[in-house]
Image (cartoon, rainbow, N blue to C red; front, side, top):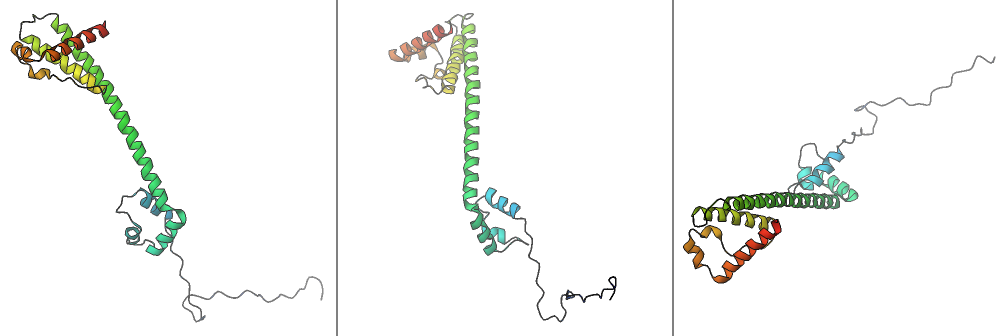
Length: 190
């Protein structure tokens, strides 16, 4: 045979059998494709009601056994605990930041209320009943500032003092304590 005349070899490739034909072997189903990333995320970020069983009960979801195997292999329970810890830590930090911001604002407001009361006292006659209103403002401001700073509160509630007679009813120790605190407050402002 001349070189260019080669005999064609018969093909060894078998023809594909069509599904449902009489090939003898059962056709294999394609494995369902699940979005495992979304399922894992839902489990990890979900509340206590999001269980593997609850996830498997959803239409088109993997079986409970498949979820158990996958979650065990990828440590979903540990990832969930870690996620919850991170969220709790962030929430605590946010709470602390908020408390600090409120304390700073209230402290500043308390100091301003005291300044207003002090400047008002300069223009009032102390025998005038309006002075008690000014004193209440000063005390409320001081109390707000002290609370904002986490300090102890006054033992005398100024809002209970309505007249000079109420002041006279106070025990000597409380009067001296109020006078001393006021003196210190004025000295600190100077």
